[in-house]
Image (cartoon, rainbow, N blue to C red):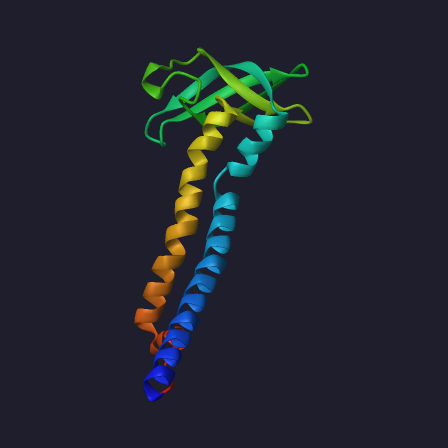
Length: 163
């Protein structure tokens, strides 16, 4: 009888530990994933994918030392707009671009200041993976790091009595 009770207590303890770890991971995944959506351009590319208008723009400047930035301009509704983007994603790679070259640009018709260089679908696909990886791995690293540095948290996480 005593062995059965100890076994049940151990199962209950492991269930609580698992529940706490999964709960913390889920909260962390939502926080880090949500931050990732804000920091990266996922929302912008999603909007441009569905609401954007495709046009032809012109490369106005290339800056290799600044993350291979591509400065471009385009016209919408009779006005000229300009922005900075990155090569590829439906346009030639950086090493194949020259100033004055035509490139594909997408912009929002109700806000032409919002634009992207290249196909927003391809840009969106490129941004999603880092956000997912951050949402999955950062909470695990945070839980392990926090529990190794703070004994009180480790005792709580592992359902150990206070000493």
